[in-house]
Amino acid sequence: MAENFKRNDGLPPAMTRLVKELSRLPGIGEKTASRLAFNLLNRPRDEVIALAEALLEMKERIGLCGECFGLSDAPRCPICADPDREHDLICVVEGPADLMAIERARTFAGVYHVLHGAIAPLDGIGPDDIKIAELTARVQGAAAVREIIIATNATVEGEATALYLARALKPLGVKASRLARGLPAGGDLEYSDSATLTSAISGRREL
Amino acid sequence: MPAEESTPAIVLRARDYSESDRIVTLLTRDCGKLGGIAKGAKSSRRRFERKLEPLTHLTLFFRRRPHGDLVFITRAEPPPAPAPILDDDLGKIALASYIAELADALTGEAADSADAYLMVARAFDALGRSGASAAMRQSFELNLLRVAGFGLEFARCRVCGNSPSEAGAAAYFVVARGGVVCARCRAHAPEGAVRLSPANAAAMAELAGAPVEDAARMTDAGAEGALALARFLGSILDRRLRSAALLDSLM
Image 1 (tube, each protein chain N blue to C red):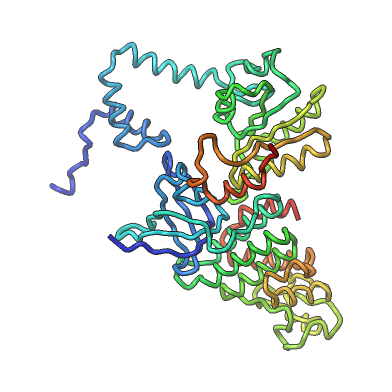
Image 2 (image 1 turned 120 degrees about the vertical axis):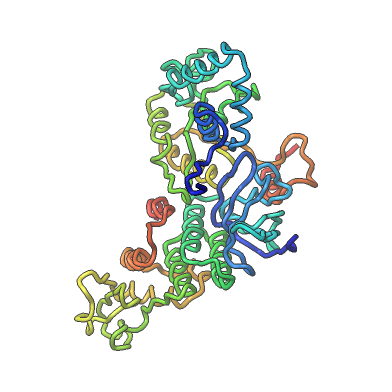
């Protein structure tokens, strides 16, 4: 009977479950999830166990640094615990990926504060939904903060967050600065959008 | 393949989709409110002006798809006139976000939303020039409600037709009547009517009758006017606007 025919994807339930779980990940559709599942099926057992253990260990051990709220497997992350970093210079970023990007540049010797989001009025995300209160408490509790560099993204949400932070930090008497906006290194003027060029012209510097 | 179309547009909403695509909702001058997908929008500033960020004013190029609700956005270029700068002030961002969300909530997908597009474009221009104010918010709310078919009446009593200020007393805004009743007709106002002082009722009448560009030099209708508008919007919208919380905290 056609109406009693049960649709089958041709996979054993364990594979179907793995495909389903993998396809929950961002950027991974069902086809990619199937390819990954078959790849894992064909890998040696010890490699698959290592992957499973790494996933579990990550979930069990990784938390947030009590000082900067970056990812950490200890109460203080290696950056906050490093005595050679400039602890009176704080760079505020939206997320851990932004912290990693700045660290890759190897030019910043201060410490960080991770907001875990940005003020997004259209999504109903306000100042209380990200770690702004934690930043002001940190500044008030610190012996001295020389400067706070606001390194939120150059998006509407990033600008809203930066402007809110500037307001919140002003009464605390701490110097706040914003990352410059303009042309990317190696970028051609010809291929720049009008908003970037406007920022580059208004933020030009004397030679 | 469907022909490429183009129209001035304002991005009301945007969300990331997969690694580099974006799904956006746009209010356009010529084609109503559109939902569209922009392939590679997160990685190509050259093809997509400001990466189709919310509140961006642009010239949209798109193709309709035979199946599916979303149009295929091929590129987005700067608008014909310079776009207002909205991201240099928190009040501007908060009010522009509210304007975009309210326009999204009050406009349908029909192609006759050109008036709503023009209203938002003019409000953004005024906001870029003069900054955010309570008068601008109330002016936009009143003007967009009129465009959407909800013309609120503050200059005449909804019962007797006289000017509420003639009595020199307070007026009462009644949601169900879409306007005010004067002090003499107060018996027609239910318990929940919002009391408006003579000055605030006059300010509402003035704001309702003036273009949004003039709001910067006008007086707002105070907390009473804001409450009247919030009550009316609450009666026609099925949810509280998300952007209202930040805006309310700033003004």
